[in-house]
Length: 226
Image (cartoon, rainbow, N blue to C red; front, side, top):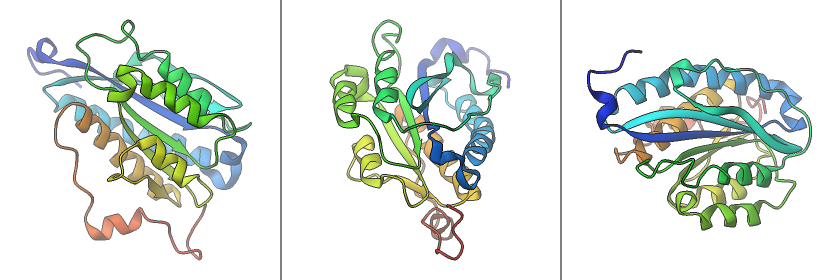
């Protein structure tokens, strides 16, 4: 997607981070395949958001976490240049390790002094198996960590909803729950655009219309996949 003439001169860096749960439970019911598909579906929408935003130059990075955490996309990459490599499941749910890895790059440098607040989306289907609370405290003790705009997507009914709400840190914003692959695409798309707009000081997108919002709520047990 070509840039508007002169757009790079005015734009400030906006770093978008995806924290992706790759624990063993993500192997069940096609969750990991659905997450990989959802990321691929969302990237063009994030690229469009980047193109239409005169204030921000958006780049994407991703952290995978299971037993420990590691960079899945380490180099800041424009969303329309990112070739997504499939995540693979297996292991525990070391969310605290993922948050510590995120915190390791939220200092100046490597963050630019003129950067916009980081935008972070966490996707998980379970309960943290390490010291999540302590890691979150360390993140929020950093100036860039405290300023970050955070959102979370809960995959299925077994996700630690309260933990995800604590990660968001805003009593007026709740995690989005996805109970099947279609809902996951919708939820991840909304969460991604929401944090990108909020971090760049553009009004976040409004809650979806009623009929769409209902699709993002936990499905009836008879219809739920996860």
